[in-house]
Image (cartoon, rainbow, N blue to C red; front, side, top):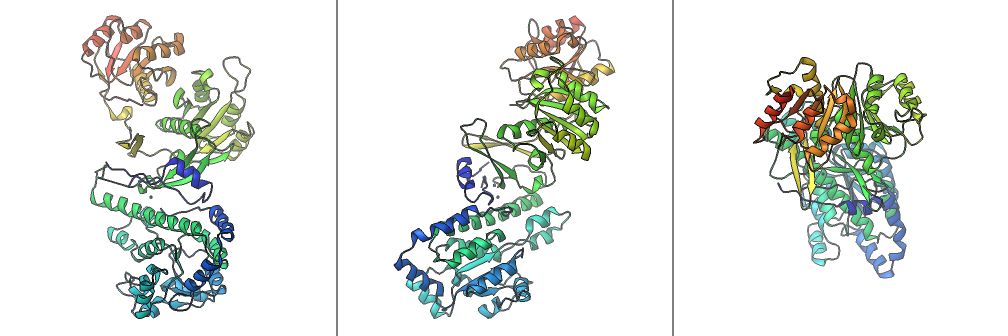
Length: 595
């Protein structure tokens, strides 16, 4: 599936130092409109203009400003009219004549700005319910004409067309419309802007002569620039980049919406665009020598989907690259459980999981599952953190010595009471406190490989979605089967090869990331200790061998029930081995690899 990269992480880091808030998007041929642009780069660009001045270029610029019509003209057509009066009055004060359309013209007139309406330029009325207003040579000729080409200027003069020096346009709120609730297909189509993108693209292409602005937060920088001699081409180029990105973002939303309207149930289009909006630059990446940034995915499919990307940070240091990875792993895991649950994660692996009606007890059990790993980890709750739980988090001592207060990088929960949040903030100035919405299901999962991307459906299977089929002579008791389901759900979130040992809705030990399953099993048993006797063991994939291997070791260590997908050519050996030791064996038929 063709995915085209429009900006790399290195480019993002470089540009973030300038136009930081204008969302740099990695687009896979992926991109809503810029929402939180920073003026840092644009303002800095103004200061470079003086160094670039020369008498010759100043004269040429002055001649260009007057254009064919002998006056400086601005074209304004806005859906989002934020700060329009400020812009209009500022431009008028600089001697610019303003040409505008429909509601924008009315708003400018109400603000005391003199306006020439587009139809006075085109000598053609707005028609087709507003679909045709600016699609006219008198508009686009004035935008696209190159001022350094005599035959362009002659053509304008012959047809009585004036030039535009500035184009200020933003687009119909398509993204907001189609994500605001139920919308008919016809209404969605009517909210696709045609004239706006055409003007933006035309002005951006001819940015050497025409300034194009799509974001109201750039109005102050624009007015400052217009007060000078306007020779800073970098300023113009950045506005042009932003304009094309604005249109690309818009088109990505339209494309995604139309695909879903036209291809119900088909998850993988021949090509698609993922709109990534720069949320923050990070101190560094996975390691200090790597630059990094964090992007929010603005795809229509992720609106209201929850997850760490949209989490609210109430307190603590800024999030790091590894913080995001670990918090995501913890939140995805804890979101799987319906009953009150605590999950502790270290290096993206759950090292402690416990479910209890008493969330305080669940927290204690989750930490005790592996207190050494839990120290410096991430703690996640699928419940509200109240005053009592906050106190327990703040004061709980490490089970390893009974004295050291547990230290965490992050606490993430579905919510906090006012008092609970206040208490948690008192634990540490650096503790990151996140509030997140439960992660959605049915999402498209993307992962980068060298030169391409892998796409797959998210792994949403839960124990309720599958059948645990008994293969052994001894059928599991009800509590054993419940333990197996709990262990199996935990194993889903452990890196392969994954083994989880659990009992009474509590993870006792886990082995993760080992090249062979037998080693993961041994690690899990070392952590579980004597509590493993009678417990459930879940494996993310089948056991390739049984005798004198992982299955027999598990039986000899006193495990009560084993849950695995099955599918090995030696499944019969696993059944026979469990029968020999009186262990229940259930097949899930579902593998849970996690790489």
